[in-house]
Image (cartoon, rainbow, N blue to C red; front, side, top):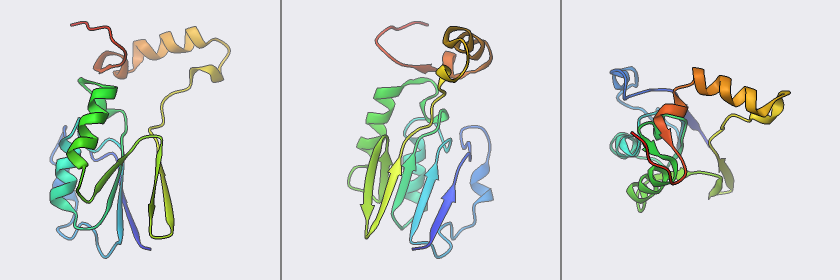
Length: 140
């Protein structure tokens, strides 16, 4: 099986679609979009228009920007339902005899001496803590 992998296209920021050739699959049997393609469901819609082979879509952090993790993931899965795009989050998909595992790799603060200190430093320096919602609390 030939696999074509794309990641970190950040289509929400610039005109990266021009960087991908017209024949984006280039003979591949499967395309893997490995995160940070576009925000929310826009990456799924883009993949549906762009590729004519099965697509595995695993979110990066930017897919969730300006949204809620659970609701964004649910809407991406709904948009992909019945199409060639498969959004995976802590899931596996069998394509032929090939098992594909997909999961977003989030930061693990427990690897250092102080979980609290590490999380506070990350909160000061990472946009994720301002731009991604999780849980029930709402703030502006």
